[in-house]
Image 1 (cartoon, protein in one colour):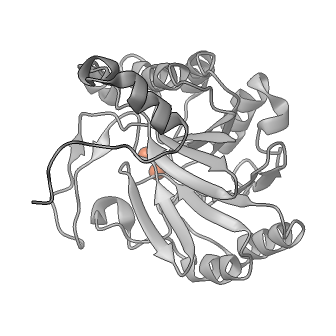
Image 2: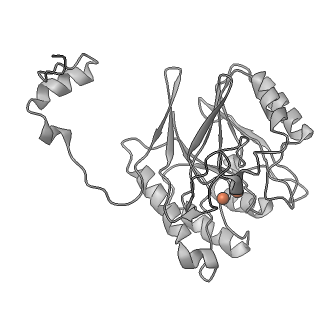
Image 3: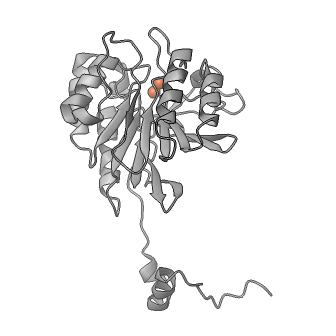
Amino acid sequence: MLIAHISDPHVTTEGTFIRSVVDTPGRLIAAFETLRDLPRAPDVIVITGDLVNDATPAEYELLVECLGHAPAPIVAIPGNHDHPRRLRTALASINADLAPPPVDDPHESSHFAIDAWPIRLVALDSTRRGLESGEITADSAAWLDRTLAAAPDQPTIVLTHHTPYPTGAWWFDYQGVRGARLLRDVLARHPQVLRLIAGHVHRATQAQWGQLVLSTAGSTAFLSGTGVGGEGPPLLIDRSAAPTLLWWNDGLLVASEADPPGAAQRMDLRDLSPDWATYEASARANQPIVTDRDTRS
Ligand SMILES: [Fe+2]
Ligand SMILES: [Fe+2]
């Protein structure tokens, strides 16, 4: 199973300040084109929140247009820039089976799980009405605990928008997520969880809670400046992140980067090797590659 993880596309319409600086819909479509060009199509594209910037109906209409370019089914969760009900309606118009479930209060948390693939996806809504920062409530943690307990042998990835650990960029971190301790305690009880993936900080980061890896995908719209240890000016960088690929194969989850967007010169190993046939035969047979380069004398 191949999962592509992208985040924070911040799609917005003509006339907004963000759009005057960055073509965020174009950058989301460019990320989809990168994924379309992979040697193998992803089974699913996960988008961890902030799908639009100002949560207007017009932005969600534009988002649906952009998602029409996706080369695989989309699973997405709301971020602090999203209107949860409008996001759900947009996602349901594309694929109702993968959309967050309807809730009575548009700002009520909407958690959900998807059992469509060899890896179970469990989406935990970290947004709170009126807050830019994230929160895991006792109710959210209890839902997660119940949901994970229902499939203890199923390899699982948990999705949140907010990054539940401080990455060093204080202007997005807010010192992590309120209630992150509850989340950590629940995840420690469920070793089938392979990884927690998040967004919000607009940078690719990784952390570990014991055996559990947590990671973020950078934004397709614009990166955050680098914060280290809570220091650094609160910058946004005019660059789009490469999608993260999560390849589940034979009990191993390998994370890698797809191509960064934009043109790059390509060199073909077949043109560089003096004996490509031998090299290819050895590499495909998982055999050692012999070299005559003297590096040991
Ligand atoms: Fe964002
Ligand atoms: Fe966010």
